[in-house]
Image (cartoon, rainbow, N blue to C red; front, side, top):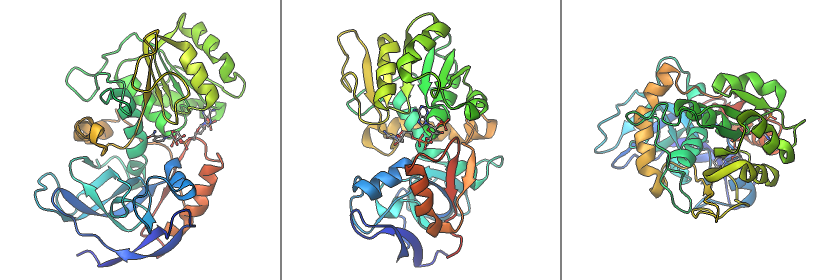
Length: 353
Ligand SMILES: NC(=O)c1ccc[n+]([C@@H]2O[C@H](COP(=O)([O-])OP(=O)(O)OC[C@H]3O[C@@H](n4cnc5c(N)ncnc54)[C@H](OP(=O)(O)O)[C@@H]3O)[C@@H](O)[C@H]2O)c1
């Protein structure tokens, strides 16, 4: 039986500092389950919510996008899960569904059982990074939609884009790692990425064929470096970094009729519409529970356990955050300062409370 009260990392009011406090354990309504959260991964958006006051609909707010844990209670109509199942899922930014707390609600339509080969910590690295990579590549075209490629989790989807080159910027970022792995499943090749040399092996293990060091080859020179590999422009770019410089380079190397996925505010093209030369900017919204993403997100989650079990999709490298919920703010500060390289920070909400 779940307790009635729990510890949570709260943002008491808009723009306030995080504090560890207490809140009620929610009850799952129809279609939802209650999860005892064992591992929660940290993401840049957690900082944006606290530091810029975005996304949270109410205060006190709770953030945390990625959760892995054990089903503690099952709401009406849920047939795919039982108490005791080990699961991984993405939050929605309402407090009851966030993961920097001990218990949270999860939508049973987009959740996956964790296979035996992955730990809770590894599984927790997956949801937002994978969701953002996947929605940008495979969700339906719309103002905040995807490029509508044919997904690898559908029948005959593996290898669909064989022989087509792809550029993924930021191959050692969480989103970049999943964009590379999805590109590989979709058959793209060569898969060219940018990263620091210390993360070259990490990018290659995900499926990159070429890793360009952005510290020595600045983004202004990237189109020429990519052309030297491919012999021409590329039909698909996933710009996981989406700095001004990386967006310019991505747009320049993109072939007419091709798509570039942008993770931050687009500075090139017109999101959702074709530019004159047929190039398309996709402004991804990585939340699989967003209305436009729900169907494709649900179909991906239905295949996720198998992809994790077979190693078709691998988790990010894990770095554990010490001291439970109380350790998260300092770790988020490190992430905000750009001092996290080639790992996903993962906290244990049940620890030290
Ligand atoms: N639109 C959405 O829905 C959505 C969803 C999720 C994330 N995002 C955004 O997507 C971006 C990536 O998020 P994330 O969680 O994947 O980040 P992350 O894992 O925290 O990114 C850290 C990595 O970024 C790499 N990096 C930093 N600057 C780089 C550059 N100029 N070129 C290449 N690599 C660079 C570093 O690589 P090295 O250490 O190898 O140098 C480091 O490994 C963030 O800006 C985030 O806010 C958007």
